[in-house]
Amino acid sequence: MQMTDAQDLVTYDVVVVGGGAAGLGGALMLGRSRRSVLVVDAGRPRNAPASGVHGFLTRDGTDPAELLRVGREEARGYGARVIDGRVASAGSVDGGGFAVTLEDGRRVGARRLLVTTGLVDELPDVAGVRERWGRDVLHCPYCHGWEVRDQPVGVLASGPMAVHQALLFRQLTEDLTLFLHTAPEPTDEQAEQLAARGITVVEGEVASLEVHEDRLTGVRLRNGEVISRSAVVVGPRFAARAGMLAGLGLATTTHPSGMGEHIDADAMGLTAVPGVWVAGNVTDPSAQVLGSASAGVMAGAAINADLIAEDTREAVAAHRDRLSSTAGARRS
Image (tube, rainbow, N blue to C red; front, top):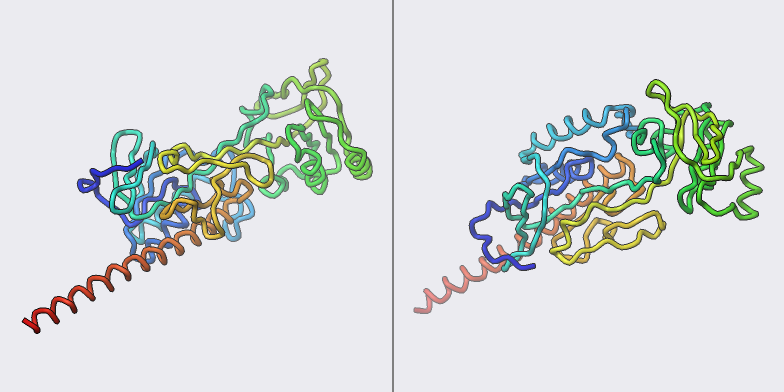
């Protein structure tokens, strides 16, 4: 999609779409490089339901909202502008760069884009799962496993990684049950692994989660049986939030893990569209907060280097023009 009416737009060196750990990490690096940066953030982080961010060295257990508050302050301290909003679309501009349109109609220009919009967790369609998500319905042993150690935990089989999840959570508790739900029977090798680790396997479809006084207490099967559990592990399908990139010709592809879709990019976050970088869960579904922040920092550095190359080309061209004009004036 080409847009030719960009002359009236306020143009930033970089517009960062999404203000989570990846976006703010990129904004921080770009701000420290004296780049003009606009961060557009909808204020709905994926980890909002969680009580704390884990695995983030020196910040373990920090409230997700507090981490973002501090991150915004740090980015603003280097001149980045952070606004509340949601980007509806982006299109290329004649002569280079992009025009970014927000849902409320505001439009800005950008020489480069850093998209850090994250992903949506598509959860199993079981009553109670969505309501308890991020509290006592979990998916990552490294993010929340310590908090449910030694408790009766259930793994709801909802994808190809269910047995792997069960083996990971077995490291954290001896009381572990794998609910096959609608998944196929484990292979002979998997069944042997589960038995060797003392993991109970329950056949039959799960109907709902049992909750008492705002605490998960069990898993109810379709046959009415209730099995006591304090936490349930699920395997969401990961869907990148990338609709705003459609106008640039960027579409999601299946992630190599098979766990969902992502925007493909190189090691530094550069996509197939020149000038557009991605970082965090929108391209790496398995990235935790610390990894996302690091990826944002690396993408920010790569974008700055790319802008420097462009600035240098333009400066060299202008320098040559000046020399040529001076030489022409002398000859005349």
